[in-house]
Length: 314
Ligand SMILES: Nc1nc2c(ncn2[C@@H]2O[C@H](COP(=O)(O)OP(=O)(O)OP(=O)(O)O)[C@@H](O)[C@H]2O)c(=O)[nH]1
Ligand SMILES: C[S@@+](CC[C@H](N)C(=O)[O-])C[C@H]1O[C@@H](n2cnc3c(N)ncnc32)[C@H](O)[C@@H]1O
Ligand code: SF4
Image (tube, rainbow, N blue to C red):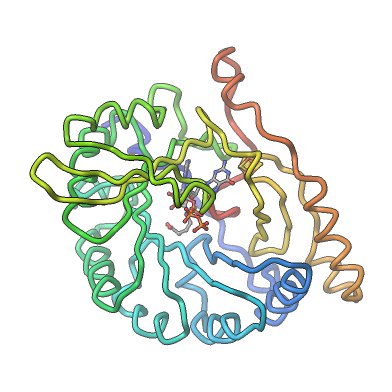
């Protein structure tokens, strides 16, 4: 196992826990969401950090899902608390979950995440499946860490009603453990899997999110859904319509660009709704055309991005 144990940069081992007062309150979050909805936003994803560990998260989600005009609330989780929370999440109206799962092997999972809880996460996934959630499994692809399991993950897509998505490992975070040797492009992953059967591009999902989705028809007649997210080798910036709001109230127009606007300062400084809406609109207008990671990779330039996944949420 390489030195960094495959920590994808999402949860840093020495993560700083922010004081409660530095976080946007639920009231503040709801105000920002309502204004964004008024401006035309219709989908919210809760991510993190780990959204399910925040105190009173279920009450917050209950209020969030009742906002008029908000079509859908989705959640990305490490799955640790899923078994316990799945029913309440379903009752709140959430129907789609993304679960991060970089290994199907309990010991390796423990080394990657620093938590020996593969079985607990798996039970959460199964509980959510049985309740009827649509489930996507997020796999950050890391050469030398989990590339020996890509076939097992594709098997999972054939055996369970989950969409398995392989995500290119991004160099996010100042002290990110990202190493060029670990990077593996989405097209190489697909090439490694072609023996399993036929991969047919799913046209209906083309603009449904960052993943390029394929129907997998296995040689023995089973079917599944496999996605590839390639922010580095084949970026999708021209279709990107996301804004990201961090827990401490910074609004970003791009995952890989550190320009941020301080929404918390505005909220706590008495900004009017009009002012806040203007700032949200300006953030959208400032959206960069794209990122230069592929060029930097080809030129052998440093790839570290200042942001941090656990802050930005993926
Ligand atoms: N660079 C970059 N990476 C992204 C972007 N969106 C998603 N990703 C990566 O892809 C992963 C999965 O994204 P999700 O938001 O779970 O994707 P999704 O479920 O298909 O998307 P929605 O259901 O539309 O929210 C993220 O954790 C990131 O690693 C993006 O806009 N830019
Ligand atoms: C940052 S995590 C936060 C949400 C939650 N705590 C979890 O573990 O799912 C959200 C997503 O970011 C993705 N991610 C984390 N680090 C990444 C990296 N370096 N490159 C690409 N994706 C990454 C993971 O796949 C994960 O699904
Ligand atoms: S603009 Fe930024 S956030 Fe959007 S797809 Fe490109 S890199 Fe990702």
